[in-house]
Length: 108
Image (cartoon, rainbow, N blue to C red; front, top):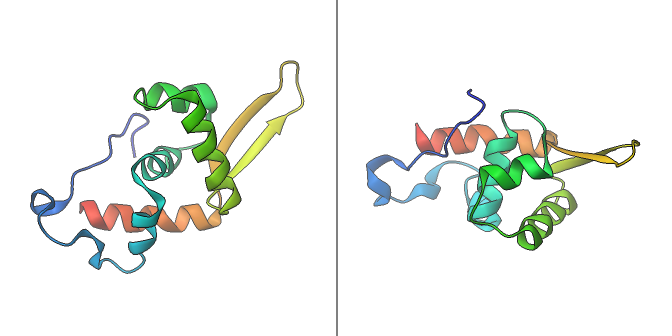
């Protein structure tokens, strides 16, 4: 998968029920921005600023809240490197990795 992958559109122009894929109902509960965050983290760990650049329509406040919620739900892991200033990276957890094939199947 490419570094700057775009989230795909659903088959059939989105008219068909997109949540027939097993486990996809969990994606519906995540919400659009969280799905995009998970999708882009599927290509590797990213820092907050990198995620913010990929998703320019989201405010820093909303993005940090979404990341905190995803971490609390066990979808991603937040890693702090003890440097000055501290470097914070986000990566998918095992549970987050399980969502990637569901998203790919919805786009297939």
